[in-house]
Image (cartoon, rainbow, N blue to C red):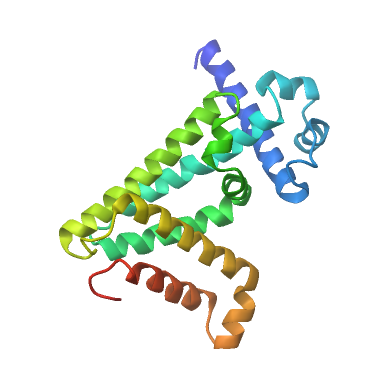
Length: 214
C-alpha cells in the first residue's frame, strides 16, 4: 500500500468511526438534541478533527442514511436475484426490510421523517446525491421484481408496478413498526410468535397483488 492509499484508508476509518458514534448518539438523544461536541465526546475525536471530515452535523446525518440505504440496496438486489419465484423473492425482501429496520434504525427513522423532497432541498453533497440515487435504484429493483412476477403469471396484470412498489413498501414498513411497538401484546393475545405474526402480515399484504393467494 503506497502512502496515498494508506492516507485514504486512515481517513475512511476515521470517517466510519465518527459516523458510527453519531448514529448511536442520534438514536439515543435524537438528532436535534445532539451537538458536534456530543459527537466529539462519543467518538473520541476533537471538534477540529470532526470538521476536517464533515462539513456539519447534517453532513454526518446524510452519511448515516446513505450507509443504511447502500446496505439495503445490496440486500434487496440479492433477494430479488437469488430467488426465481416472485413469492420467494418477496419473502426475502421482507426479511431484508426487517434486517434494515433492526440494523439501521436511525437511518430508516430519519428517512421516513424527512423524505426525499426535504433531503433534496439541502445542499447537494455527495452523500445527498447518493441518497436520492439509492432510493431510485431500490425502487427500480422492486419494480423489476413485480414486472417479473407479472410475466411469470404470479402477479396480477392489472396492477401498476411503479405505484405498487410504494404501496408494498409502506405496508411492510408499517407492519414492522407495529411489531416493534405492539408485537408482544398482539402475539400474546393471539397465541403466536412474532415470526408467525409477521408471516401472517406479509402474506396478507402480498395477497392483494397475487393471482392466487398464499
